[in-house]
Length: 243
Length: 391
Image 1 (cartoon, chains in turn green, red):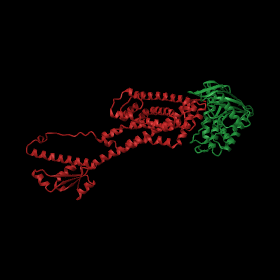
Image 2 (tube, one colour; image 1 turned 120 degrees about the horizontal axis):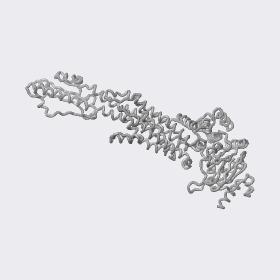
Image 3 (tube, chains in turn cyan, brown; image 1 turned 180 degrees about the vertical axis):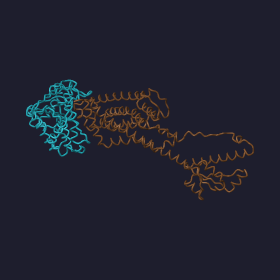
Image 4 (spheres, chains in turn orange, red; image 1 turned 90 degrees about the vertical axis):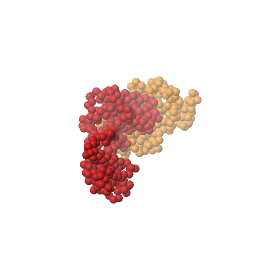
């Protein structure tokens, strides 16, 4: 479970996150929806302990990210904004390296990687060096890497960015599988349809604030619009006018 | 799980990764060969000088006219052969360095006490024959002086009266001297190997990792920044040590192969010297690797890091050049200056001078302290939001 109260973060004179609060439950997919530059990535970086919050409390399973970052990292699986692989290592070696850093040992590590390779349909490329992998293959390896230690909480920053339709579909099915398994999944996106199709609860973020929240049906109702895209424009825009 | 184990996991991954990388392997294996190859080539040239001297041979036209002179030449180690009839052509073409001509009037003139004419044919535009022509001329002068002295003695006059000056050449540019100068560049090349060997790995594990976008995922693991930095540093040190080992081995082979003894040079490079060289250079590889990682972490990109480190590659040469231009008397505090200390220490080892443990400890201790400082500074950079997310 992830909770954020009154998060504020600035870089120099640039305010990245003005005031964000939300709560993500276990067994649910929580979506952070917003235009580019709204503060989604910064929020996820604070959650993943790489950026320190200026104000506000951020906890993962009740553990404060600023006070016990190492304990938080052990409970998080993060697909960050940058998701490069080691081109001279095979897909399996890439995944195993992170598994080992999370304290996993053989034979449990190999079993877990086999499991992920099967679920993510990576068996054809698992033993190949990742140099020359397609975008979709790279993304799947990066996801397997971030989930190798079977974390309870999963943060995905724009997970379907740059994927073709088929890859995006299978990735969505995979994320639903995580929810079924009881994980707390938080994903950020600027694509309305994706968030609507996946998320149990949506937080619309604009200019560093939560502009609206609810299920996709509730958001439609709040905005008085009939399509999600219009609802998004209306909700994000309202906030802009209010500022 | 201990941070020690995580350090080892990081080091092992980087070693495996870079063992598969041609650029890393080549920079660890080829750069250190630069010095030994250069020195072997220079010695080849010097050896060819003295080889030419040894085979000095002179062509004389009309040797029958002066058997005593021919005997004098041969007594002084210069074999005499008959000059071919087309000697002028050959000297012009450069296939013959020098020819001595004794015409038919030589024997009568010599017997009558008139100056007997001797012509030395050479092409002064060719530097190749200068040394041999000079040698021939000196021998002729010596023979002339000897014959003159005998004539004076026969007339009851001291030959010393005919030699008011005793001119003696003292040539300092002997092959020995040149060879010693070349040998004194060995410390510089060893220091260079310590810097060049790990350079590529140092850049790749820091600026390279960030540029490829695998740095942020790595930082998301529960490994401490200290463990990540130390593991990466160990892999860099391994590459630098490999380079140092290659360099030392290549020098050991070179110094065994080149004909140092014929040049009268004592350069000992046995097991004891190798052990001392490693004791002096090892702390430097630790320091060089830590410094290179810190600089590369500060750099915004792989290319920027490469530029910084290539500038730093000049460092090994600066103290060496300074020492060559303005020779300094080594004192203990200089051992504490990284690179300069190792240059001086290595020079002493190669000269075979007895060195106590103190200079090694001073040089090694300062390097170790600086290594720790740069590793801590790098770990601090790994925690900085500005560095981690720099684009």
